[in-house]
Amino acid sequence: MQQALIGRSRVLGAIVVAVALATGAYAFTASNTVPNSNAGSGSGTISGYTVSAVAYQLNSGTPSNIDTMTFTLNAAATTVKAKVVSGSTTYTDCSVAGFNVTCDFSPDIAITTADQLSVIATS
Image (cartoon, rainbow, N blue to C red; front, side, top):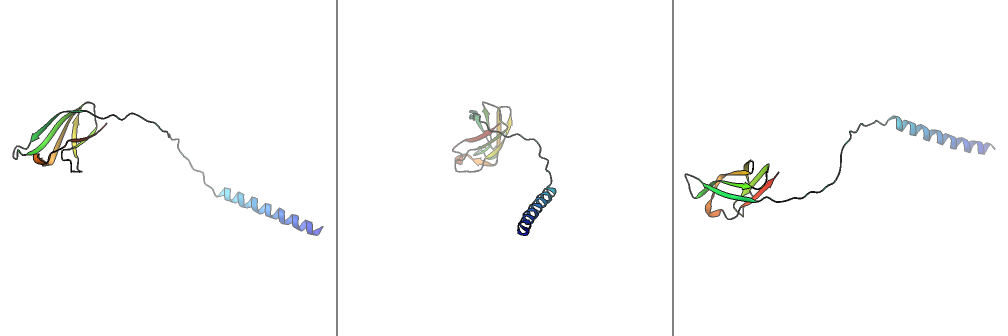
């Protein structure tokens, strides 16, 4: 009988220790405040722009160079970049006023190297 009492005491002691550890661990946790947020998924159509009325303005001092270029987009854009040399990876930042765009090349582009108009536009 004394053996059974010792065994029960050990089990009871283990339970008391486990409860104390669990309570102690809970006491050391901090609460976090997390603000509400939104998450989701969606899709939309990406359509391109139509570029028209392209005009190149030559440098007055070196007329074999393109100084600026203007064109019109069929929809409003906030950011527009353009290049006229197909082998180049550099796009020129352009200014936008409504649908009208002006690109000021600096340095100027030699007419002999201008071989392809590439426009990137976003709204």
